Image (cartoon, rainbow, N blue to C red; front, side, top):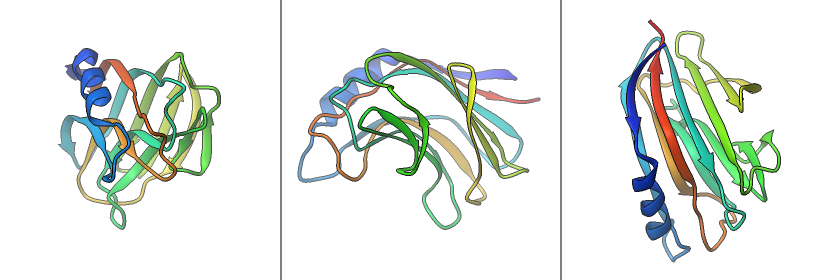
Length: 160
């Protein structure tokens, strides 16, 4: 896979801390990473640190589902990384760096999620014709009063 884009983690960390305190509105802070895509095999790669004060938040998303806005979301609830708010992906994610790789095979409508190089999840997509990756903090149910994710070494890759 060839690299397309690399992002700075410092700017996202500052943005996430400043814009994501609990409020009357659903706060979000994040980046759209890479390109809109509709075919091929694409990979999101990055390292994330989630402080123990963060819960009820999506930290990574793939937009472009046919019936919902997203076709994949990774949430953090009480120290566990989950597929949406359901299936566990990784326990004990607080206060440590995790390497996250999400591979989207559009033609097969399939996602594979690796955490620290280990295959943790393989699920079907939710349709859609155009997709893009997002990462940061996005309020979900039962959100904590402070939400933060720190990202570094983010890259978007496309299989040639």
